[in-house]
Image (tube, rainbow over all chains, first blue to last red; front, side, top):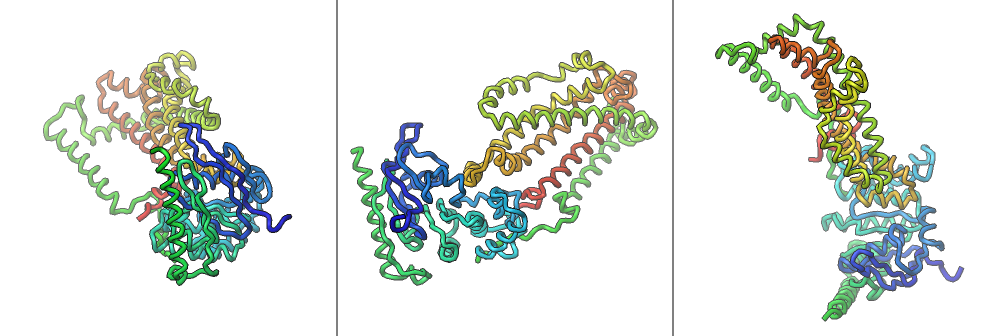
Length: 264
Length: 274
């Protein structure tokens, strides 16, 4: 193994949608190293969610190579090498909190004792003690999303894919969830690929921010976030934080402008 | 920590029914007032018996004829329940097959819709011919065919109205199609299925009674209604209709109760989100 093997490795990944012949992604190259927290940011239509689904082998790329955990993305999915969190919590209404978290463990044929042991640990990790027997509709949006994160991490996957997980939450809850996620990331030692359209969220959470532009979706630039770890509420008030936010914003703007100039 | 939580509703029987006394008292009051008005108007306006007997007369007749009526009612009820069970079971099976193999479903749906537009009750004399006029099977066949379509369509809609992310989530666990059906599609379809089943109870009763009208055992409700009306014994016809109504409501209630037990997790059953 040379240096540290990448958890995700994308080589000139291109995606065309057959309907309308739209090129969603063009020649994407990206390496995600272990324990990184990578954010994909860009305006809607830049293909960031599609890229996440390509990594998860939920959408096939038109061309290019996708390697996850050292194997083809398809094999990685069959090996359950990643957990995924969507914008909606996607909890099953007929399952309690505990049963929702246990879903992947059932799919992995864990026995009952091992399942309930792990569910207890996960409930503790996302601080939902006392809510194990509640149904999803009895929880607030933030709590539902924490159940969804616990479910994604329950089987200890090396990679966590998150598609705008806090996009539907109010600002206060979102900032609290950001802190939660950083703590969970530290404790679980997983690698995270995180899709967002919030610049502040991307800068606050990430070790690197990948800026994308639309039509066709491509990477405009990658910003290293050199803010000290662990991050806390003070991080958002540091001068360096604002510099990095500005840098990402500038990149987003140039990407957008070059996109606009094309048809003219 | 966010703690906006709706506490679980205490599960008393009243709550299980989704209503407290305060909610159903108005309905009971309306029922009592309605019956009293009926009685009062029929007496006050001297409405002729063959047009509309008073509720008290209907009830008296029912009591006098209770043995015949209850036995006829149960006979027809068996026809309805039998047809309901056969038709619903077949409908669920077909819905599962069509949801599993979508091209097949797409190919068959136009014919299913066309078949539904056929006035099935028109086949009653034919099924009498097929299954024997005296056999309850001929009425069950009509009830089953009438019940089939609403149950099949509702179940199919439920099986296919799963959110794409729910399926993506299962794919991320390398789930097979069988797992997706068992853990996502079938639970999602249950509220839809019960909507279809509740409609089906009413249709099955209609199918069985109208099936009776076309002839069969003398000990059937439809025959009783037709015969009484034929000899101007309208109180008896109304008493038979009363029995049919009670059985129909009980049938519907039983399925509604089963729904509440099976879907105890569903917000509509547990009192909903505040």
